[in-house]
Structures are given as C-alpha cells and as structure tokens.
Image (cartoon, rainbow, N blue to C red; front, side):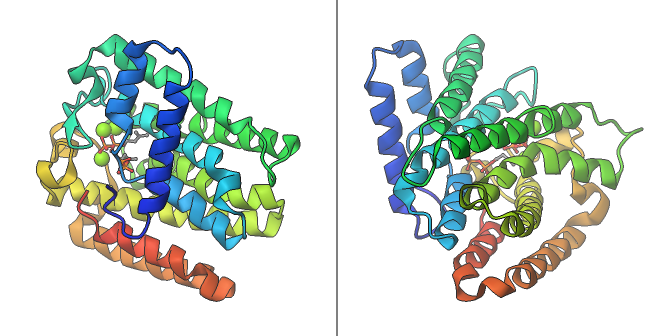
Length: 292
Ligand code: IPE
Ligand code: IPE
Ligand code: MG
Ligand code: MG
Ligand code: MG
C-alpha cells in the first residue's frame, strides 16, 4: 500500500483495473506476469494521485480520468524498469523486491517497458464523458511531449552523461525538471487541459515545477538518509555512481531549506484557489515527510 495516507481507494481501483486489462485478452503470459510483478500492489502512485487531486479541484470526476491516471503510471513504471537496467543505473532492488531484469531477464524488462508505453497511449486515446476526441488528442500530445525527447527520456540521457567537467547547478536543475518534473507536469496539466482553461494551465505548470523539485530533492535525500528496507530500493547509489544531484551543490541542510522555501511558494501560488487547494498542499507536505 502507498505510504501516502488517504488514497487507498484510488490505488486499489487502479490495481484492479490493470488486472482487468491484462486478463481480458490472451496476452503472452511472459509479459503479463512480470507486469503484475512490478505493478500490482507496488509503488506510491504519487503521479496518479496528483493527477486525480488536481482534476478534483477542477471538478472532474475520477471515473472520467481513470484511463489518464493509469496511463501516466504505466509510463512512470516503464521509466523505472528501464532506469534500473544494467546499461543505465544497474540496480538490483525496486519497490521492495528484485528489479524486473533481476527477477526475469533483461529482454523481458525491455519489452515490459515497451508494452507499458504502448498501453499508456492506448488508454489515453479512449474518450469519456468529459474527454472528447479533440481533448484526448491534446492529452496524447502532452504525454508524448512530457515522456519523450524534451521530457523524461531527454532528462534520463542528460542524467547519464553529466560529468564533473560539465556539472553545474543549472544543468542539474534542468536535467531533473526533465527526467522527473516532466511527468509531474502531465499530472498537473491533464485537468486544466481537459477543462480547456489557459490561465489555470499556466498556474498549474508552475505548481508542477515546484512539486517536481520538492519530489526530486526529497528522493535525493532518501538516497542519503533512508535505508534499503525503508526505501524499497538501494540507497547511497547517487554517491557510488557519481550521480549529480542538487545536494551536491546545496548540502543536506541547504536542500532541506530549499524544500521549505518551495513549500511556501506552493502556498502562495495556490492561495487564490482557497480551501479547494488544501488537499494539494497537504500532498506536498506528505512528500517531504516520506522515507521511500
Ligand atoms: C522514483 O519515483 C523515481 C524518481 C523519479 C525519483 P517514485 O518514488 O514515485 O517511485 P514509486 O512509483 O513509488 O516506486
Ligand atoms: C529516476 O531517477 C528518474 C526516472 C526513472 C525517470 P533516479 O535514478 O534518481 O530514481 P531512483 O532513485 O533509481 O528511483
Ligand atoms: Mg536514474
Ligand atoms: Mg535510478
Ligand atoms: Mg534517486
């Protein structure tokens, strides 16, 4: 179950929906079993929860955006499976268990990732009461951008290629906004895109930037301060693998101060949404308090 409180209903529903999708056709068991292994009952589902919470603020009911939320978690899970591969971060543990390529094999891990990308776009293209064909197309376009060259994948290559001679705070910031921040952009913008409101899109793009950096800095702190059993993944690997994070430039205390500043910025940014934004502000706080 998620370490985030109060969201078990969404998490359970997404799991059940995923099982239903995987079991409804005669798909190869060699892919279905590993997808269930890495996905069902695993992960915090923070991106789906954020998407659902932003949509709630815009009065978009869960049933209409369920496919969009699951699509985003499919892309995120694929990104983790590939991130752990020997050619990338070469990690053995993920979500409290062996990584997919360790449990199965590398070819399976690559293909499970590929299958999850395709499934994500299949789901996004399904219209609902609140999502007409044009809106579905806008969501497909946005997720393509956020997950691809100028988003998550682009950030992943920068993460692998940053070296001591090129590293700077700006470069690391930019890399993190791409590799991690871009999927949070999608989570925060799906609601305003469905509603078709440009002013809200601008504000929620800023919110996504803040949320993404609070999330990534706290992930980097987890790498330093948490344990394998708490985090569900190996820790101290950023240092071992010469990964550049903002902590390199800010120090642990400086990083925590920056998180506190960004939490304050969130409160100011969402002030005009009043009580409707309280749940989002609490979610940001929960991010900071987590150990995994
Ligand atoms: C971990 O993401 C990878 C980063 C982008 C830092 P999460 O911490 O959201 O991973 P799960 O989904 O809960 O396993
Ligand atoms: C992963 O960042 C980002 C993506 C998967 C896009 P990290 O490499 O820091 O994530 P962890 O620490 O392995 O979860
Ligand atoms: Mg990585
Ligand atoms: Mg990694
Ligand atoms: Mg990390």
